[in-house]
Image (cartoon, rainbow, N blue to C red; front, side):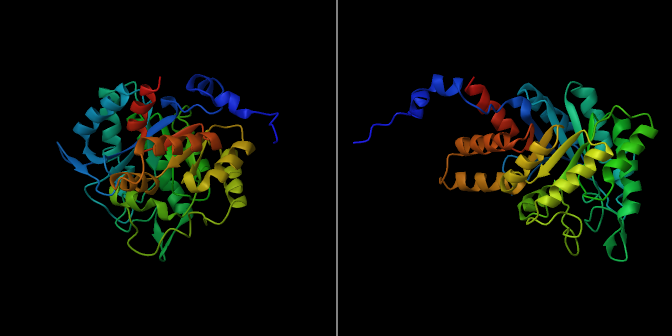
Length: 326
């Protein structure tokens, strides 16, 4: 009978040694919690396709942010649902818009929370697309001017970081220029550099009320079949001044996260998106999987692939679970 000479199991014998040699450490410091804010008072609308997530009015949003802060999650990213939408997404560029007021309220109530704001127009336009529509298409260059205006209002409100997500060509450069020209050169940009046209976004579009009213977003978001193109997009955004590069979605694109991490020296973020979250919730509800174990394994795999930061709807739960293991 063959007797093994190499015995890797020696370093798996108990939890202490497994912890000591563990290569990837998931931490609450890695997490960013996405949140949705809507008009009104005392509003906490459940998002049916994303159990445990809500659209909050600003007053209740601040209270929820306090809870997030107590759990040790260092950052949130905000998405707004305005009362009125139009073809230009005017609320997005108003100093009195839903996001701008929400940022000011959070900074008044929870000043230590790091607030990131989504820079895009799909939640604010009546057509649900990510910029200005000209001749039935999203016009790239006129949208760049709008993105710069939006970013300036977010910075004026007190946002710590802006995150452009619309996949417009030149969006990082346009926003960087707008911020710098208006005295906000210290505001970093986390770019959705490799954002794929993915079926995993479905529940988010319920949450943000941002589904396109015609067509789809394949003309500006990336083809899921492409990998080299993602690296090209990343290179462009780094050159234009991005401070953090994001890959979205995460789980079906772990190979992209890995390739981006190997290519650049900037921090890499990954968005564990709504569809990835909701599938786990649905399977756990049916009793088919262990939600805690699956969620932590998923998040660890994203970190192992190379993500320094993870945007995830599991952030609050993960913070609690990680504390239990300390």
